[in-house]
Length: 107
Figure (cartoon, rainbow, N blue to C red):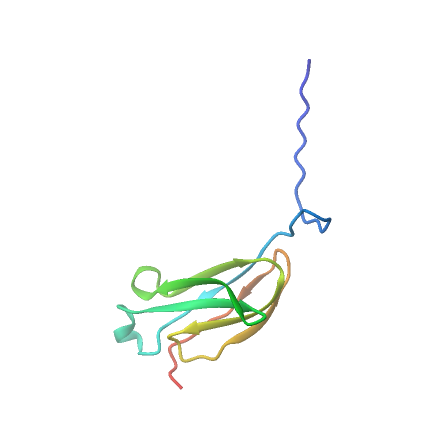
């Protein structure tokens, strides 16, 4: 008796199944200059309809300020507490990869 195994992959929008997430990633550098940034961190958050749905801490010493958020498709406000840059709006689609950098320019 033979056993047949089938693997199905890809996006689907039928009820009960989720679309693949998108990714927002980049650099988040503290607003203190590179000389002092080594000991600091920046919290990067994604908000949807005024509610924080995901956040991550980018540590400059450990990962040079790199952050990554995997999110379901949707419209988000991405902010970086500790950076001098303003929040950014993004519409994220399934499987999309968006780069948003928050630099160390203090305003």
